[in-house]
Image (cartoon, rainbow, N blue to C red; front, side, top):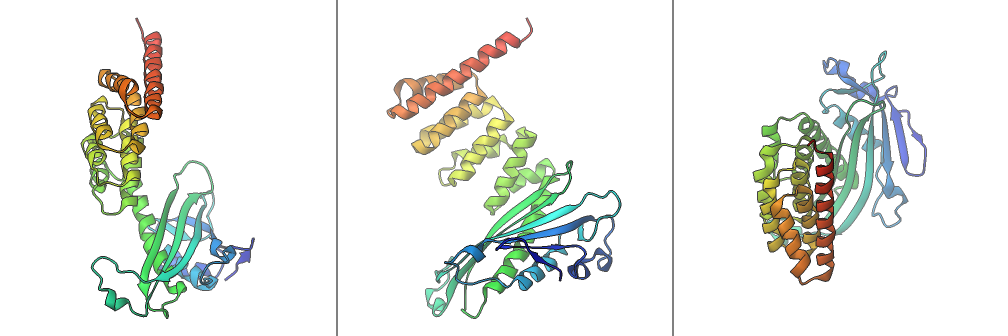
Length: 311
């Protein structure tokens, strides 16, 4: 395999390398697949003196080569004619090892002699020309293993799982509304966040009830709640204002600043009334100031809309 070290921690290879033989679409019967012409691997753990091991580059490249076979609609080869070239970036960001800990209902007695090893890897598949979207996924793969189970084996597992996440991200980009709405109930947080991003981008009003449910859920993780709030604001449905007001009453102050500005963005009579109430009587001075600023923004936007609206 032809490869070159361009920095202390980077390795790169091209479609003209021996890897082509491993992933050629000619061996898979693909038609009209887009060409991945360049793969860039950045292993940041090589510069980390605290890393418990060093990944073997050849084994990592082999795992990536095997994984690329599973990416639908792409093949590792040279571009033909005016085809858009694509690049796959792979980033290894973390290797850790600590004492084994039970997972779920795992019996602690079964962990004797084991360690918990983890690797974080990210991938980005992007065009080398404007006009097409890119796809990205990141994964922290951790498990309790026997010490004989190497970090190279763990990384190979992570690459395989990450290819699945990348493929899901690609499918999600082309998903219909029903699929996006269904993904809001997915057990995987990253998939839910990806669905919320696309729902916000496409302003899918049918998602408002489910997003409202997420915002109200006091057991939900903060970043999921904030993403749901952001999606509601992007959709711009004033019907979401009572939901956010209710969430503001239930949740700790750490959420409230985000909720106040979200309410101001959605606007309407209920929004103005709530912001005025918080500004006037909320016990936390900093949040009263946030409410005042949010109310000022809302009123200034409404005044501007009156100026620009036709008589």
